[in-house]
Length: 316
Image 1 (cartoon, one colour):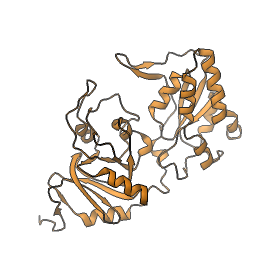
Image 2: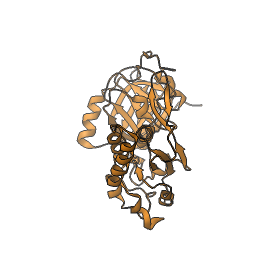
Image 3: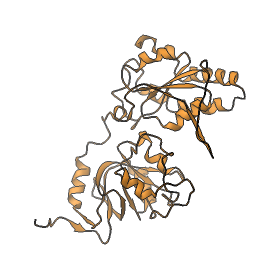
């Protein structure tokens, strides 16, 4: 087969990030080979890169990490915020080093490859962050080829042609497919994730999954609530008859856009803004309550300020 003359060696680079306007960032590829198109955004967290990659709210996005040491504690099976990585790939300043953590089960680059996610290191991630803050999150393609040969024109065309997150119903893509109970609490050294073991009369919270991190559910259990997770479908409000206490929602991917799967009786964008941190507010404010009765009162009081179940009476 004749060699494609459009494939160009990129000065020793095995990974590239190409923006829709033709801007090119070169680096060293890691993880899976191939290419992925999505929205390039940034994350400034100093820890929790595995949790960020598996956060459902990052579906359809490429994460540009500003903190340089990404991958230095490896990866494991416990630190997932979703069933799988939802971010398409990641951009890092420094190369992934050997893991330095007793909890590590594999290297981060191997974890990326296992899940089919692309990484590029050796990039000025803070320059990208400044660009995003000034011009907004662009369409981008992240690509990795071990031989360092890329068709840059084709990658630019792919980024240009992508429709963007506008209008995509990503909440439907990342939401669970059925209703289920969550009874797992926070992680403790030597114990792992502790079971909730809550009594039958504990406050009951129904969590509508628009892209909910597992940490939110664990915080609710820690606060003393029994939790039922339901999918983000127009039928979800009918499930709220299970709950006499509260409904908890979580922001979906691309929260600035309207979601087609939002229940028709809700207040649309205003509901999502109102519920942006509802589960965190509920969990963090209640976790400080010293006794079980106090926690129950706190859950009910905080939930009433978020989304009372009575708000959905007409949608049942």
